[in-house]
Image (tube, rainbow over all chains, first blue to last red; front, side, top):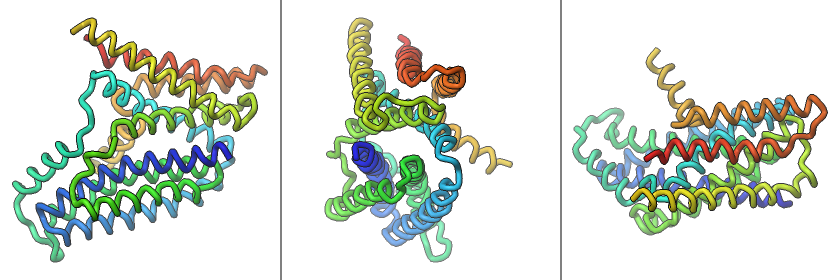
Amino acid sequence: MTSAVFLVLSAFLASAVEFVEALTIVLASGITRGWRSSLVGLGAATVVLAAIVAALGPALKLIPIDALRLVVGGLLLAFGLQWLRKAILRASGYKELHDEAAIFAREAAEARSAAHDERAGLDWYGFTLSFKGVLLEGLEVAFIVVTFGSTQGNIGLAALGAGIALVLVATVGVLVRAPLARVPENTMKFAVGVMLTTFGIFWGAEGAGAHWPGDDASLPGVLGFVIVLSFSSVALLRRRRLAFA
Amino acid sequence: MRRIRAFGHFWWDFVVGDDWRAAAGVVLAIGATAALVAGGVDAWWLLPASVAVILALSLQRAAKP
């Protein structure tokens, strides 16, 4: 039960962050280059992503669970530490905060200055900007859904978390028609880094053959450890930055 | 060739990111856990401890004045 809640929550948070970033790119493309090309790009990328998840999901079921947890645990831990490291550096002032409004302004300015090139009845710049943006952000979602879901033996539950995030971000995006700058994205990225690292530690150790005391019940303990580690790192780095200022 | 390189670069950037030492540390820590388990030690504690060290070193490198 605990791991199922973590699974849905992690997939939801990670997906929401990526969908907010994808929405910024689709909006920049749609507003500056026309909605048709932007939406066709969005649709094409969604089809490619669905095909990747549909192909990889069943293929991963064929791999023995311990081997899968070992590889996925290692990948998630490396991937999660990247997120956590960046989030800690942002929270302590060593890295600029992620700003959707600024990213939107930059993407829109680049899109406005690009030359018009029509292919297959579409504005090619608008199509590729939207397609690439959604595909790249979506690949992270697909990676998380497939890895989380397969190691827990429940891709459907991970996909549910991602699906809720997609519906929520898309609905708000359609209503607002502006980058979702008010979404607490930096806090969410911090939370995702913590979750990914927690799952990476848990599955990596299990995949290597170790047994956690209390099995799944130790997951909140690992989570608590990663949270304490992260917050103490932020506090130490802040103090260090002020000392050097 | 350029596409293959771009594909490889994408995955490297995706999983390893800008600190390859941290990713290498993860591989070493998981390998050491497996080796200890094979030797009869239930080393569930090694990975959390290693993550604390890997993260501290990675942050120290990134925050160098």
